Image 1 (tube, rainbow, N blue to C red):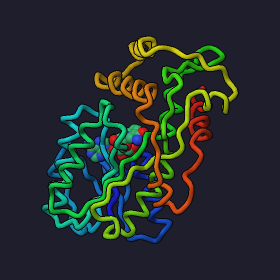
Image 2 (cartoon, helix red, strand yellow):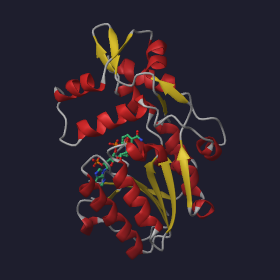
Image 3 (cartoon, rainbow, N blue to C red):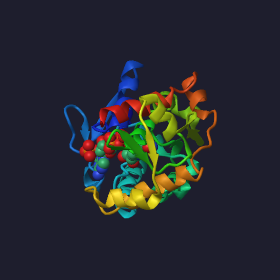
Image 4 (tube, rainbow, N blue to C red):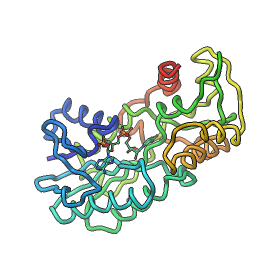
Amino acid sequence: MILVTGTTGKLGHAILSHLIDRGAPVTASSRGGVGASRALDFDRPDTVTLTGVDTLVLVSAGEAEDDVVIARHEAVIAAAERDGVAHVVYTSLVGEGDHLAFALAHRWTERRLQQSALSWTILRNGLYAELFGSLLQWSGAGLTSAFGEGALAAATRGDLAEAAAVVAMDASAHSGQTYELTGAPITAHQVAAHVGVTLIDITLQERREQLDHAELKPFQPAMLISIHTAVRHGFLARTGDDLAGLLGREPSKTVAVAAEVLRASE
Ligand SMILES: NC(=O)c1ccc[n+]([C@@H]2O[C@H](COP(=O)([O-])OP(=O)(O)OC[C@H]3O[C@@H](n4cnc5c(N)ncnc54)[C@H](OP(=O)(O)O)[C@@H]3O)[C@@H](O)[C@H]2O)c1
């Protein structure tokens, strides 16, 4: 049986849907256990039981400080070892993302799996096209962006979910593999042109000042600025063939998906 975590979230829900569509024996889990899903709260290790699970799709639970995220992932991997899970598929962060403020917890989790006796596959997900669209700010009739001319090799959540389902369906064939899952690079200027609005370039300091006025958790401004500086300075632009290889087709066009999110936020 395959178990997918984080199915109240967007990625986990999409992975679950793909697996159900493919007729896989699959069950869902979420923090609170909605409907028939198992209640696994990673912040309460006593709730994390994985009996009967052959393949675990561990969707990172990453919206917190590193110590919290690492403790969550440790609780799940320790339970997988204890309860006899054969294979763990982990949704990580693209290799070029090492400069991002949230990279460390992903690399810790990768290392924890690699040093375990579990069979594993690491899916190093590129940043979502949906996230890129959401990070452009409406200002009057136009948009502001601190991404400069930098490009992001983005991927859509839908494609990343499908790739995770493909791997989970045939886990042993992907054992010990690390995949870099990115699509064609896109820029803020391309997204603005797609929407048909003017783009005003701003500096990182101006972006930080915008964030100062947003209601954010303490760790979030550093996380968001790290995304902006990495894209702006060309550290997230590299793409490869792994996503197309798992999907068996070209990845979806990401400019349109980013533009859709942007329009919805107007
Ligand atoms: N590649 C990217 O661009 C990108 C962008 C943002 C995030 N991410 C990472 O990718 C993950 C999935 O993305 P997403 O878009 O699906 O995020 P999402 O919609 O925020 O979903 C996150 C999921 O993690 C679950 N979770 C959080 N803390 C948990 C805990 N203590 N115990 C059990 N479950 C917990 C949430 O459960 P609840 O609903 O109960 O909170 C939710 O189901 C994120 O968690 C984050 O690590 C990647």
